[in-house]
Length: 443
Image 1 (cartoon, one colour):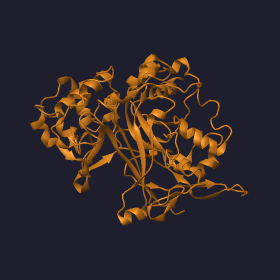
Image 2 (cartoon, helix red, strand yellow; image 1 turned 60 degrees about the horizontal axis):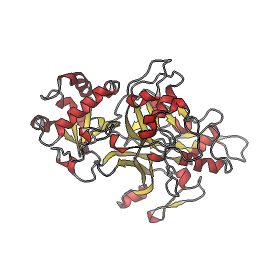
Image 3 (cartoon, helix red, strand yellow; image 1 turned 135 degrees about the vertical axis):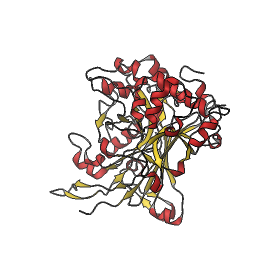
Image 4 (spheres, rainbow, N blue to C red; image 1 turned 120 degrees about the horizontal axis):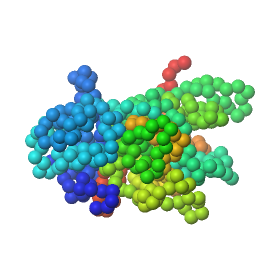
């Protein structure tokens, strides 16, 4: 085992939950992500939300499980918080407690566990659950770490100077809107807003005609920092709780008119979708990779640099985007894959994002969400947005049945997926981050 892994990552581990042992599952016993849920349907609508653990195609209900015997006494308080639907309390706990909780959950769910008989009745099929946001999202900052996305988009507007001078020196970000973050499966209504045609004298107001998605990851902050106290990069990893998928829906035409001089506003705040399961940083340990910069690029300034970050600050996460139009659904056609990429292409690590965010004394807190920015690959067809794949709307994408897209149409469903896979480690996944576009509200 490496410095970052332990017995919970052993690829030979199996679970008494049979579906967790099936090839290709996103949720083997080596994953154990957290989510907030209740039973679907009329009965569940009257139940309180509780935290569960995804295991195969099931959920371990911690509201029921925490009162069963076999748990270490020191975990009584965090298990009670999870049973009450409070993930933020556990997120804010020291890393040592979070690891102890993971170890106890792994022991309880593995083949041969003495807790099997007590916990077998605490399972609910994921298909029978209604999911909510996994935690209280206290604040939201979106970064711009995808250099391939930044370069491709920059070339559309500045062919001779796609990256602005600060890009390779400072993690670029803006303050987003936490209140409009929704869980996977929530429809997204096409926004209305101001646009201005190049030849028009005055802007007009109407539905966005260039609605887009952005393939991102959402990093959720664990223990926070006091106002005025920066977080050294040596401490940043311990202050990251886990990751989910993030679709930062974007109205490109609204953005083009409004973003100068202060950046994105209504073009982004109408909705952002995250996947319901938080894959912990501990679960991702086997998929760490060295953080490197291309030859000739500047190295990070000292406050964003450390030996550990260089050795294992990056994460090998394979990402993909899928589209199903309304016409495809009516024919019974499955979603088609639009693109793939890998988080290894990010220009900054998650630890660098957190350290930079707090470097001016900004106080982060458990439940803050740090978006990574759009994660695209270097090759054609690896764009993490339609803005890239359609070359700014100049190159329509042909779909099954003869449909074309340059941007999203009403009825389109977007699905983001991700997984980690390496020799010597069990494959783990993130589940889906999905949303369907509804027509704009009538003015």
